[in-house]
Amino acid sequence: MRRQNVHLMAQARHDPAAKLELGRRYLLGIEGLPRHIETGIEYLGHPSLKDGREAAFAISECLTLQEVVSHRQEAALVRAAHAGSAAAQFKLAIWLCLRHGQTQPCARWLEAASAGGHAIARRARAALGSGATSDDVLAFARSVAQSRDLEIDSVASLAAKALAEEPDLDRLSHCLRIALAVTPRLTTALASLVVKAVHLCERSGRQVQGLSPDQVEACLELIVTEDDHGAEYLLGRALCGIACGAVAPASLVSGGNLRKGSALLLRAADGGCHDAWMQLYRVHADHRCSVANPQMARFFLEKAAIQGDAEAQRRLGALILRSASDLKSSEHGIHWLYEASRQGDSHAARLLKSLVLPLEGDDDEADQAIEAIRHTDPWLAVRLRMSRDFGLTKLEALCVDPIDGRRAWGLVVGRNRFVEQNRVAAPRAVPALRPAALDNLQRAAAFFEQAQRDGDPFEGDWRRRSLRQRRAFDRHQIDEAMFFARVSSATLDSLRQGTKWALRTRPTLQLALAG
Image (cartoon, rainbow, N blue to C red; front, side, top):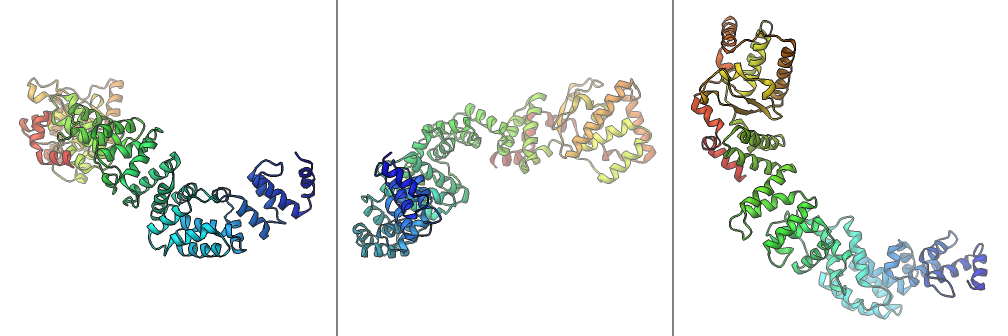
């Protein structure tokens, strides 16, 4: 380090003028000192200089506009502009126009800088014109692109970055348009701001303004190379012709490409954008598309259902149940419909209800009857509770095993070992329509497990259970229709076979698959 700089540092401990000179040298990197903006600002920001015009002049004239903004020295820029610095007035005019959208104050500062002899400010004021339109501002930005006092593309990017945090979509789109127009080469930072603006438009239900589809597509393409799954999801949907909220695909890309779009959606889904699985299903399930593939569509639907998409769960459950030919398939279908219903899907709830046989009577009256029977025959009371919750026939209610039949979504009435006819004894799955039904089923299973551990043979076979039930109903004057569904074997069979059930519930099923 030069001797005079060492002497100046010692003098700066008590002399404001030395601090000012030392700060200026650090900002410019002259007189043997390295350029170090932070150190220069630290000297110039000393309380003895902080509010003086000399420090403000040094900061605003020694630093470019992007450096002033990056180091949060806008206040110094404003002080220097008011104190008469033409360079500060020129820089402040540009920042007010790009960052705050204030064209009238911008014009006044440009006029002040022009009066102070700033040649570029004079040219910029002429280009700005009235400043009433975005084209006026764009012409103004291009007129100052050759200025050595600033890099207009960097300044525009800084302004856009600040606006993206607020966010003000109109001003952000306007600023991005300027940045894209004056930048010599698209950068990742600028492209990421454009992608962020598109995300903001999607979330707020707004259209992308001021940016051409070619510009947006180029930005998306660049960010996709950075393994940004959100950009992949955006670009994939746009190329497949799928709207991104209120943002039309035509405003994001110049043309469609189903194969490329599907590949991007698959990458996005695999990277954690789980909504992409449902979009992939729609594309591959559409027979009109060139990439239509029923097998792949089913795979994507399953992936979406696993990730918790209620629509996917409802569609998958309906499709499985429609073609179910055995108990295992029925259970699988009911499982997905139940998951969708838990999320409030009304179509799934209606399909589940179609699998439960209706019973007569009022719930309060049924509860009173069960409590009356519980004192003399708790086993029968438990079975009546299950029958009321799941709409069972008399044969099913008196023979069902709640221990083996309980499921997370409801009850499986197993094959009846007391009946020889296959059609009557066949098992069936019954969903729970209310959370209370599952709670009661758990209590029933616990009750029967305890009875088994105690070796209690009280229930006996089917005939003995039926006899006790008739006597109890006669004693308490209970109507069987309150607890046992009265249906034909053909109706029961339609609940066990997917094709027959689909025919029986065709309107509801069509709504569930189309909704």
